View (cartoon, each protein chain N blue to C red):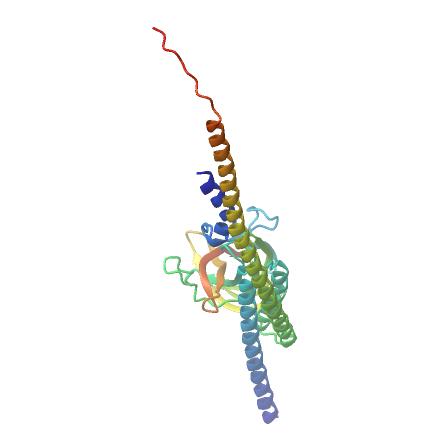
Length: 154
Length: 186
């Protein structure tokens, strides 16, 4: 009887340690997922859907932690594993989204740069052509002018 | 002159990408509202076995999405509150927590329901030994002496705001808390 009680207590301690480790691991996974989402956001991606999923993972994680804090270990493992799984999925999705956004962002910068350079060159050429035309017309007009003699009247 | 204006006109999209616009003041807001989402009817006189509800709210103005954790704690008048000058959290153990991920300039709000389950009053001191928060029962052992100037047994249910620091990969106390003053009656 005493042996059974001792084994039972050992089993409870072992279960508690496992849950603590799982909670810590899920906590780290959620943190990593958030960092990946933040990187995707900085790269210019729309992360609203990822934030919704991350909130689901965060709520599950807090549910597991709160249940565990109330000395109740039932379902905690299942909840925390679910939170971990969602966080890993968000992490993977955020990395893909970040890579896509970086490519789009680079293309956008390249396009803008080309637009600025080509636009400025074309504008400069047009400006020179217009200036030359106006200048040419002005010279021609001046050359075609007839001298007029004006008598001085006393 | 016309040439310069034209070149600047075409270069403006590139300048817009290269030059970062200035970032405004960064802050987070933490608040508690009554059961009707207003500042009214915030519970103060608390009876044993009666559930009370408030709303806990957050506003993110940090310039990017933020990962917040709110820790709910209970203290008596001798336990220390968070230190605003040092920016340190209270040493009182947490009972309940909320995790939230909020986009910049967005709000978050969740109900916070609590009920004191067990209160004993002996020799001019009261002791809370059990409290329910959002349906979960927590064992606590908080004693509060009779306050003759305020005529009651006073406790605080307070919420600390923590924010995830992505540089260090840890949650840190964000130097904000909200405090519910509870006057325990039987």
